[in-house]
Image (cartoon, rainbow, N blue to C red):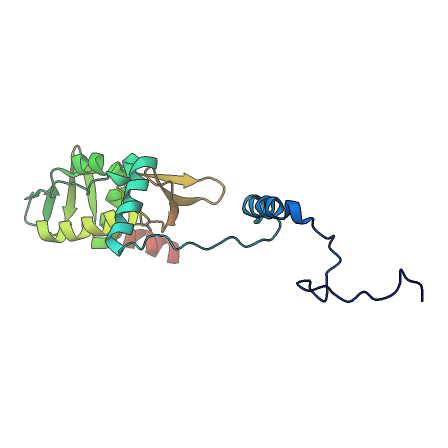
Length: 218
């Protein structure tokens, strides 16, 4: 074994092993450590390094909720400042012994931004009755009070007006021509959902209907 290959015992203060790294000069030891520290801080995340964890402030639930509301207000003021749906109560008047009139029907349709025909069919199906639109009012066959129509109107608003994501009433009812489904689009948060189609209204069998049925059977 040559002199160059002889094992040299480690000097005092030196490690008995190494990882193949070059020996550092004593004069630049402190400078190298500073450079390595800066490099680890700047590129540690890119190279898989782990930076020192620092615990942030602890927030209460109310504080976190307020921060979220503030962010929403900054990014979408219309959504944060939405108001509850304000609809006038339905006004009902007796037209005859068997009919009642919803006198402010057209006005309520305008407040909800829905077509009178759509609400008209919903009312007929839910009440299982007959009716007709006469100018600004809706004529219904039967005896229906204000409380009954108010409850019906609330169901209509929940299903065909209100956005279920943000509870906004600033929505539009449209028809998807590709799927032929009705869709509610929210102008406040951008959400959309499909709604059930209103089936044909109730139609009481008349003498003419019975006559047609007999002719078809004969």
